[in-house]
Image (cartoon, rainbow, N blue to C red; front, side):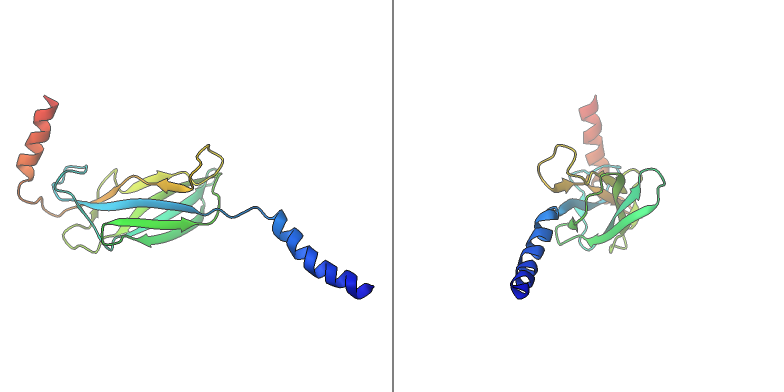
Length: 159
């Protein structure tokens, strides 16, 4: 009888523990990194994506600003990155940020485009676990040819 109870406990107990745990639903953070080839401060038709750029996702405690979570990613051949996050970060502020660019001609982070905020919680009404970060960019060392004409076209649209 004791053996039967022991066997039953060994079979049922793990099932109960597994059932009591909440299901893990990882978040997927996606974004892209570009080179601002015209030094415009925004993406243009001459903007190129950067393959091999390093980005980091950091989550900080909302009250103390202490770093709680950090994970790095690298852009693929199209300049896009994907970072998988297993935990919910409801009470934290999470930002994707530029770390480095492999291009020698485009290494300076663009002010205001060097980070992107992402919300990593299931308690916000979103059904999908995919989170899209705004595109982040580096500035080219020198504007490429044709940028003056392109930026002139943008000014014409404003008038």
